[in-house]
Each structure stands twice: as structure tokens, then as C-alpha cells.
Length: 576
Image (cartoon, rainbow, N blue to C red; front, side, top):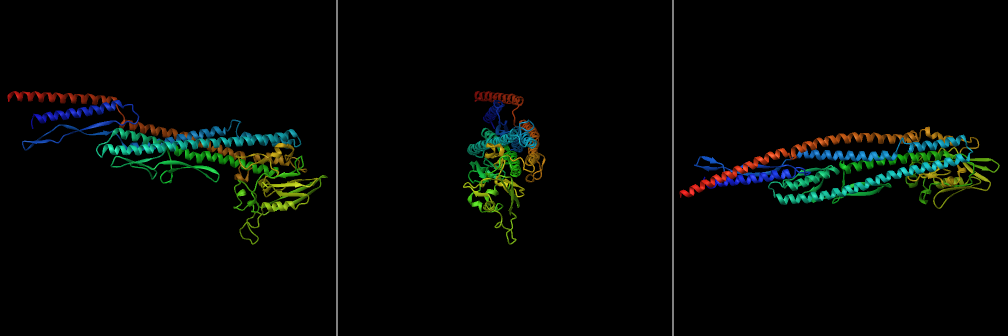
């Protein structure tokens, strides 16, 4: 080993110091860069050289690797924490919006409107012949119907906004998948299995973390340097290939639903966390449940009020009336309880086995009562299960048409129309089947749920058609409808209409409180993991400043060493 080898040792020290200084400077330059991981230059001694046959002497130093300060397990935990927190925050925001829509306990809410509605019927029972009170009952029904429709419309609008957010975020997630796959290819080409390109890897990690805010993902690093990305057990990125994501909206039983699909395979992706997971869960959960609850109590209100309002005789005798339910021709000859009768099968309520009474009154007040039996027991004349012998709309029309001084027909639109001969009027009593309310005969409300609830047109035009009671009990019907406020309803499992809605509101309130607590807890977890990650991967200005001094001195020492070797070389030259 000679002076030349000494010069090479000095050169190696200069090169290593320069690279270490460059790495330190890069760390200082990116101290505030989001997603940057601190890098370290790993120095290692060059392989020793044998001299004199038995001794070894070093040949200098080299930078063996430049590594990012990274804990893969901590990174995975942080992505999971970010996904969980984002889902909780999305759920919290959606539930708070839902609470603001229901606006309960403010006086401008469903409970208050129902109370006003039932109060007007109480007033009507106290003043059954007052035209002003009759008009107030009809007007309050109009107000209540508009409130229900408006609230449902607001909820549908909230759901539509959620759908827009889902579409936007799925599209963004698809863009990120494409970019991650592109970076995989760039990393493979740049590294060629040797070392790691910290800048490209930091970019990829930042994109994976952003993806984790929307979807719960896991990553598996390959020997080539690429990472495969999975959602659950489904691979979404394989090396440089992204299979893509897309949102699919479709109608199921008249309701708009949404699911996320893998673009290449059209397989449904189950997303449990992240903002998309939160949007999907609350869309089909709290938001849809509130819409369903509103429809449920509205349907029960419509049916129960109509069931009572159909019975009795209004101040203005009825000589011609038409039901509100339209039944297509194909269903008119199917029994009302036949599952293939789509008109009745799609209703939230329906008739049962029983009967109702038709009262024909002449101009002198003489009454003729006829009982119409409704067979809906689901058993045919042989005693076997079946609907062949059960009552159809056509059967009801024929039975009514057979009553003296009464005419019955099915209109071209599919409604049941009843009209009397001159000098006679019609009323109804004792309906144990609920068929009158189902067909909308002499009803108060029109519609079937919060989508289309309204007041029957004839009643809106003439409040004297309001049924208050009967000749024997002048306020019976009004009292019965007012009593619905405190009566359990079979269709609601025995709950009161107002109580069922309050249960829905309370459920949302409990979910909101739980979401707030969960979001706060998950935020604490995420912040703790970020602090741990910063301790591992973050840049410490103080530490880098010390490294800067150390590598500077190393560089100066190497330069001085080369200078000494040069002087020795010059001495040697003078001796030759």
C-alpha cells in the first residue's frame, strides 16, 4: 500500500462526506414538507487490503445506502386510524344535518304539526256544525301534508348530496389508484432492485394516505419496490396496473341505491371505513331509516284517519264519490290480498278479512243498511291455501252495484266510483276490513306515504264533506280521529303515531352523540400515531444541524489528509 492508496482513502472520505452533507441538506430543506420522511446516509468501511501477507489496512469509506426513516407497521396503523376517524367525522356531520332537518322540540317539527292536527279535530268534536271549524280542520290537514312532503323532500335532498359526495370521492379514489400504479412503475424503473428512491416513495406514500382517508386499504410491498393495494381481500392495484373504482347507482324496488364496483371486473367492493365508507353506511343507515320512519308514520296516519273518516254522514249528503286508489285493469280481477296484485302489494297498508256496511238514505231520512262481506282469508272453497275465492275490486264493484238505488263502476283510471239515484245519498258504517280506507273511499287524506300525502280534492273544495259523525252520534268520527293522538296503532306495533316518530328522533340523537364521542376518541388516536410517526420519520432541525457540523468536519479532515499525502508525495519526488 502506498501514497496512491492513501489518496484514494482521502477521496472516498471526501465523496462520502459530500453525499452525507447533501442528504443532511435535503432533510433541512424538506423539514416542513408534508409526507417527507427523513433520510439517513449509511456509511460503511471499504473492504480492507492485505499487506505484508499477514496484516490488513482499510481502504476508506463509502455510502452503502440512503434510507428513509420509516416504520411500516406504524404507517399501516396510521392509515387505519385515518380511515376510522374520517368515517366517524362523516357520520357525525351527516347526523347533525339530519337532526337540523327534523328540527324537533322547536315548535316547527313533526310532533308540533301532529298536535295541531289532532287539536283541530278536538275543536271540531266540540263544535261539529261550525263551518269555520270544519274549514280549519281541512286547512290544518293541508298544512300537515305539506310539512310531511317538505321534510321528506329535504331528506331526499340530503341523500342526493351524499350521492354527489360518493360519486366525487370514488372518482378521486380512482384517480389516486391510477397515480399510485404509475408511481409503482416509476419506482421499479428508477431503482432496478438497487436502493430506494425516497422522493418517489414519499409521493406514493402520501397518495396511499390520502386514499386511506376515503377507503380502508392495506398495502403489500413487492421485492421490485412496487406496492399492491387491497380493499379488504380484493386487489385493486397489482404492480403498475390499477383495476379502477366506480360508483354504480341503480333503482331497487323504486329506491335509488348505490354501490362501489371494481371497474375491470364489475365486482362489488365492500368499503367499511374512510369517508366513502361513512357516506355509504349513513346513507343506507341513518338517512334512509329516517326517510322510512317518516313514510311509516305518514302511511299509518293516512290509513287510520281515512279508516275513521270513511264512517259516518257528512253535513253535505254524498251522492257521488270516487276513491283515490287507482288499480290497473290487470289487478282489478285479482284478489286484494294476492301477492301478484302489485297495486295492493306495494301499498304500506292493506285490507283484511271482514266487512263494511253501506247506508242508503232517502230524502225523508229513511235508511237502508247493507253489509258487504270482504273475504280475504287466503283459503279457497276446498279449504286449501289460495286466493281464487278471495275478494277482488271487481267483486266489490258488483256487490255495491247490486244495492238498490246505488250505482258502482270502475273508472277508466281504475278508481271505484259510487253514485246514487236521485233523492238518495250514501254513507258507511262498521268497516272491520279497512277496505274503504285502502281504496280511498270517502277518505280525508289522499296518497300513501310522505311522498304524496295530501287532502282529497273534493274535501279541499268543499269542507262540508268532512265527516264529523253520524245522525246518532254527531261528533263520533271527530272524537275518534282526535283520539288517535293517544291511541296505539296496530300497523306501528301498538305504538302511538307521535311516539313512533319521537323514537326515530331519539335514535338519531343517540347516534349523533355516539358519533361525536367516537370521532373525538379516534382523533386522539390519530394524533398520537402522527406524533409517533413524526418521532420516527420527522426531521429534527437540531439533530440535522449536529450532523451538518459532523460531516463538515469530516470533509475538512479528509481534505487535510489529502493535503498531507500530497506534501509527502512532493517530498518523495524531490528525492528521486
